[in-house]
Length: 326
Image (tube, rainbow, N blue to C red; front, side, top):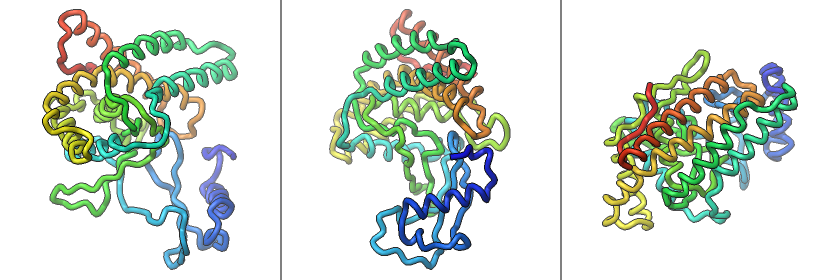
């Protein structure tokens, strides 16, 4: 397929029309091009997104494809403090699932190695040199893998990429605070340490991907949830697990303290993984998003947290909240 960035909107529409007819069958196959609904959807960080639609008067018999487009918008950074208990409850529902796939918590290691190898191959092919940060990433990989194991964080089915673009706030949500959320895009869904999903979501509070100009993201580490906010989030998360029948209400208070101790390690894991992803996307993405700059911010955040984490471990083994300096 030709790079999307090199195609006109009309060219992309023609190609999308052909794909829908080839792969979706009826009623798409009998659709004329003039009846084909096609529009660009904003919100993608790594892909250009488009909505393909049938005419409103189309009758579909025994559909085996998605039945409904739900009017909604993606979650913005300013929304987190308003809806985080709802996000926590939805995340708990996912963590309570018994999914018939392998339950080894190797998501982080799998993608870390995969992306690092791809970056090194691309760097060698494109620039005829080695990836200068390769040794650093390998060293941090070995150290952080051991730190994650030490947490004894439970292994659950995780979303693994719960950022605002993957949280939909439905338009039929009530104005009185009854928020209807949908968590989407399970591309990275896999069994993983519970702490990764929670910490990754907290890290995303600091990032705003809804800016309209370069570098197409803003970061403010002052927006990282306070310990009180983390506690409230975790309490809502655990209360939902109680409702799901996978956790005892008498254990909630002690488990809150346990989870809080997991956050620092898995915040480092999230920042380091997505910094590597950003490096990879500099080779592959056709988006205007500044992946290189985003990767630098993530790497800096990782080392800032690691420095404070090591000092804390050496001094007294305390559990105070650690966030990168602004």
